[in-house]
Amino acid sequence: MCVAYPGRVMSINGTHGMVDFSGTEVPVNLAMVRAKIGDYVLVHAGMAIQIVKKDEAIDWINLFKEIEEESK
Image (cartoon, rainbow, N blue to C red):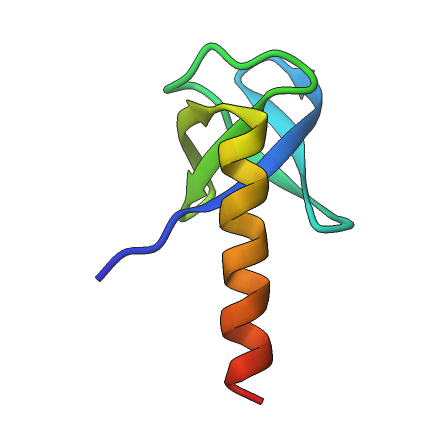
């Protein structure tokens, strides 16, 4: 199974950008999407695969936090 995690695009330089995942910024390849700064993207294996709406991304982030808490 593959899991993609949502993050917010903070900066863009060509086909790459820095994406914020709950406070941690990570370099991501943006070549497959037309993301803008401030967009939320789903990222799998370092590649943004889809732009998602902010409210949807926040719902997913909260769900992952719940799962993490329950697994402790």
